[in-house]
Image (cartoon, rainbow, N blue to C red; front, top):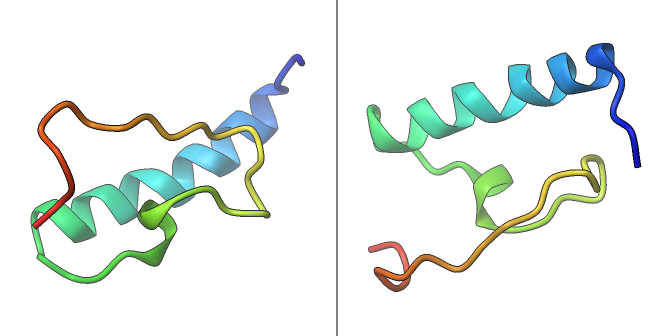
Length: 53
């Protein structure tokens, strides 16, 4: 399914800050816990390193 540039930009503007909030600030980021109904285009893959600590 094609993704418009505007939709891709919106998704990026939500997920990038969540990533940095989790990994640099150590804050909880529920968006990164798994698939979100608001962003069905985003797929999660299991890490080979196991679950997040």
